[in-house]
Image (cartoon, rainbow, N blue to C red; front, top):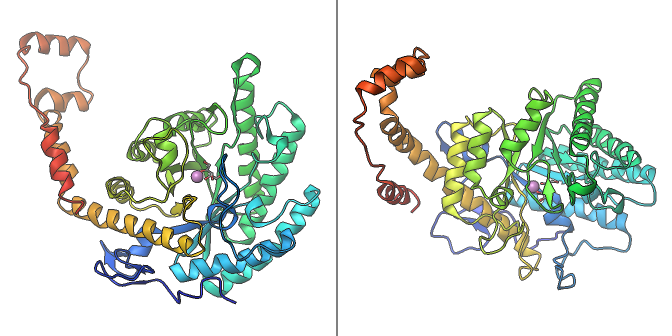
Length: 435
Ligand code: XUL
Ligand code: CO
């Protein structure tokens, strides 16, 4: 049985194609800078937005038409596996990501939950073996159930810490079973509502404890996996501990986790933190910690996490430029942590939305490659920092100067020549690469 009978396979048909179910820019096998586009982009589909969203919002009932909804939660879960792999295969996407609760119902006990996970991951493994599709990352949902009202590892209730540890252990067992390349911690409700009753240091120490236990367990089972932390400034808590890339790096370094942890950066989380996405990617690169990305976009007129499919070429170009500068994103990837709008409730919209996102990233990649080949940013920066390649600047960066020697120098050279950045001209030239 097919869930998307109208579409055999989404193929590249070029920019003039009028076929809704075709790529106009993403040409998976096209070689760019020595790699195929699909190797550059390493796209992944997110189980949660694609398979489990019902389209409801605080004002509206479920709306999404999903042909896999069945009599029992387990029957729905089984059908979702078929439909999910049909989507991945038809799109030609080679990776996927999921939370434990996305794939299997929790049932009435933790034991039942684990049993359900075992059954569904057997089905997923079969599909992976048949198709060659791989697991980019999985994670544990430790924020939806009422027990996590005050967080998971940061909860005031030690029973909740223990429960969370069990979920992470299972997540790592599943990661090993399915050959997961990364394992993600997004800090769900690891944050606070009020400092009046919160011991921030104690809660952060406990989060680090869970992370260290996880590294130790992955070693115990001989599973080499890249751990990733996904920063977000707010939602669901007022203040999330992993606020942004810089805050999360301070945490990683404070607790000595840098050998095992990198960052999974999400575009909409960046803008919620008051940053651009490229700011977050650049911060991660400064720490050699750019692990993977969650592709989506927010709405600048709304102050919350709308998780829209990325359609802004300006942003994907700058993101892809950072990824090229990083020497690629592997073993991470570009995971569409994106959901269709409420008005896009049809089954086919799941394909159309991913096609839009993939084409937008493909255009970003092509523009970024041209920027790199032209040395657009390199040239600008070389010119801008030229004073450090000669004279006193060269000595400063060679660490040959001190406050006394520089004071002596400044007293003799206090008539400083100023140069304009011509920033509007720079932005206008940058626009030439987008079209
Ligand atoms: C929430 C979010 C999560 C993580 C995985 O904003 O981005 O879906 O990506 O838990
Ligand atoms: Co995310």
